[in-house]
Figure 1 (spheres, rainbow, N blue to C red):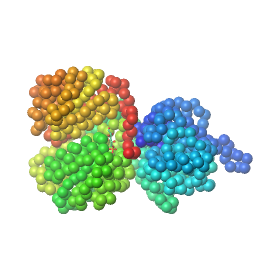
Figure 2 (spheres, helix red, strand yellow; figure 1 turned 45 degrees about the vertical axis):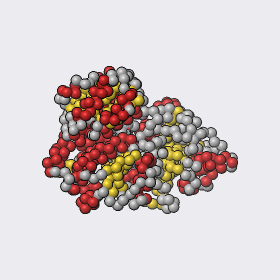
Figure 3 (cartoon, rainbow, N blue to C red; figure 1 turned 90 degrees about the horizontal axis):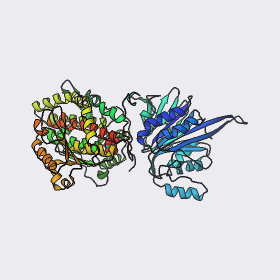
Figure 4 (cartoon, rainbow, N blue to C red; figure 1 turned 45 degrees about the horizontal axis):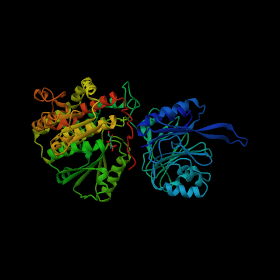
Length: 617
Ligand code: F6R
């Protein structure tokens, strides 16, 4: 949800903080702020005379940046925050950092303090003065209350008092050479460099300055000085952990000449898909031992349970179909937010898979905890090394899509689908449910997917043109069947997210059971209709909506002359096998949604009300 960055070292921190916040803006963008420890020269007694200067503003980071640039303050220790409001409106007063009564302590926070009302009343009763509507503001006051010369100790005491989730970072003029942090569920990493040390919500925030990171674990606290990062466990005992080197580069985390991150990330899909296959599918051979499952275990699997949210849920729906079809294992797919509350059945012979690009989604994390508490072994599929879900799962399969900055999931989605295909293929081979010929054919087709995606991307202008003709419509229905259905659901989700137009993804055969009542001249129906086993069926469904005067945009297989008679707009995909249309057909839909949103002048990278990783319930 919110984004956090902090720096202490031998460089001026203002630009480091603002640069870091810009890279974190996808996590929240309704207000932003920084606090800088400013030295006013030595005091009489020899100790430094310092103050904390706070600059914050409602709106996007650039609103705050303008003021920060004008303000003649800088220092070598500071903290910054970009907010996604949970408690209190997105106003300047509610923006972080927040301060205690004395103004000596400044705090930033990502998460929710569930017992803040109770804490606030207690603090108020003992004379603390509050100015914002946020839950976060209790934190500087608690630190003020607990501080007796050691800021880290005050933070550790505070942790025992709060309920909820949070990555918390604080600094105080009484301890000017240090920044302290704490983690309860919400992500927090430390970056280590020769010029100083960092704390951040995730790696892209500081990749420009270092690739050496340490993940702060749940309930740990951390103390940063210019030369050291010290981590303390739940009991407050110093622990030691070596940094790991991230293989993400700053180039990955920049727009590289594209107008938006979303567009860049759509165009990176041939690479992300290839990378996610690399080492797993080489020269016609499938190596997937990293699943960590013995052949015996795979043969004995009774069920695969997949949980996920949003776009990752749509990848799971493709996973369900290929695992059932190729490996003959029943697969259940659940929304994490439902699974966690529905008292699910867990059995040793089930495989439990969680799909999450960020590795931080709180509903998925809670569902994993629920399943593990009932004895499940959890396999996570995620794009972020060191993420909470990666660390809390029994095994992890990484997608290698590279950092995804646009709030809308695009390249992480296609990488997740690749893992689903590989999993279905691997299980099918081991269980002997896939014939050698089919197995070989699927592998050959998978090898060609990056080029086929590239072929679609090369024709992006065709989709731009269709978007130009259709963007003024007020209702969009995305219809698909079998492997086209997850693509239809995802296409509708993309359009809703970035254009704010009402869109629905629906199984084409279900239209006549209700939604067909919606169709008239104001409706665009997007039909995902490759020439597959249900082609004739969806063709009739499309004719039904066409008869109700909807505008038809069909995504078809290359050279399908027949469908052309029933469409106002067409996009031809390279041909592939039925199952792999699941991945190909989403590419034109991503581009189509993107161009509609651009025609409407929307901010595709930071759509309203959304955030990249949903770390609150
Ligand atoms: C849509 C989107 C969201 C996420 C969902 C789950 O573009 O990004 O629907 O897919 O919030 O996020 P992860 O995969 O990080 O668990």
